[in-house]
Length: 438
Ligand SMILES: NC(=O)c1ccc[n+]([C@@H]2O[C@H](COP(=O)([O-])OP(=O)(O)OC[C@H]3O[C@@H](n4cnc5c(N)ncnc54)[C@H](O)[C@@H]3O)[C@@H](O)[C@H]2O)c1
Image (tube, rainbow, N blue to C red; front, side, top):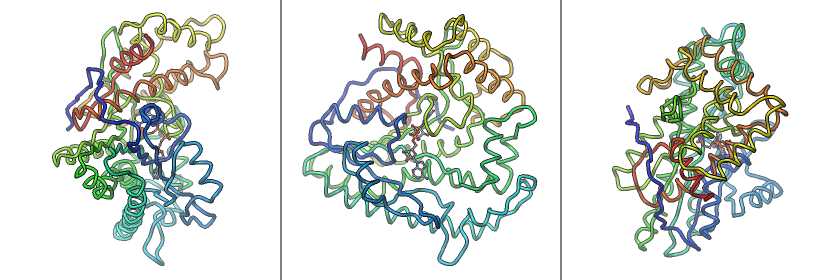
């Protein structure tokens, strides 16, 4: 089990400067966490380089970006993108002439998925095919990136990949019930994990969310060796999730979103960084707070832990700027609703006996229950309803603040070379934000 190792100071070390290279290992989305790191890299004058996961054509085959897609992605990133498809996972891979896992599971029905069995030898062959495809492409992409790194430059690799939900019709319906369903529509996460379908999904999460860090470390070994031989420095960061300390009852307490099915893969990600660290490679997994992004929007209720950040901003010495954040959030609420009353609702939710029993670090990631779904999804929906506009939520604003704070903490924290696994909790995020806005 991982020890809870929060970052408690604001790192200021910096090895990166103009002409150094920042490599994004994942694609960039508007609200994604990695925007915070990219802002830091850009401010430092680094050259930004990215990759693509590629796209699927109508037959499901993986392809590179078209010239138009490529140009658009490069413009969004503000840097070159190596056009070798790096889609991770094996849900669409199979040895020549065999069916891939998505095809093998095409017949799964909502009524029978818990009993449906998989041929694990076939699945293993698909996994091997997927890993072979990814590692071959990663080596090819890294050889291209190598050419873009000048002699004497330092390199920052930012891993951001996470995901792996296969596009199987029945599963999308099941996932909707597990992450969004309550009452009649509730579905047990344990039932999923005990099924063959669930076991396959966990394997795919491991591939996308965790093993890609190992493949990155391996594929970039020649770059690492060349750069360090020339006296340069190499850093790797990855985004983890393993719960977050937030203010509950005036104190920072660890809590988590439940059920975080990807949790097993995130723990594997931590152990990959730990193993690399043991070998002298500076790879750090930063376990980050819950925010709303393209990837997390499916988890209804994940955003509830964001609200107490407002209280943390004040507790950590926030002045005028912190007050302004309160005013911005108050402005998003409908007439007659005070921000304080919303924060009181969150405090009540966190102290509710049902949700409090999930604050168990050792037992993480715990299974969902109908009672938890009821109170968590119920509170989430009730709070959304208090806004003027369901498309302009307080959690959008707070998410952008968290990723702004996480950027410098990770950028300078990686430079300082502190530890293989670090938690960025609300205390340090608030302190960093206040320091950025004196
Ligand atoms: N949103 C949160 O609450 C939260 C909290 C802690 C950690 N994180 C982590 O932060 C990282 C970035 O996520 P985000 O929430 O900013 O969302 P995002 O949607 O912006 O980023 C997801 C990333 O995963 C990549 N990806 C998805 N499927 C992939 C596949 N099959 N193969 C290769 N790459 C794939 C995407 O290209 C993208 O770079 C992830 O590792 C995520 O787990 C998120």
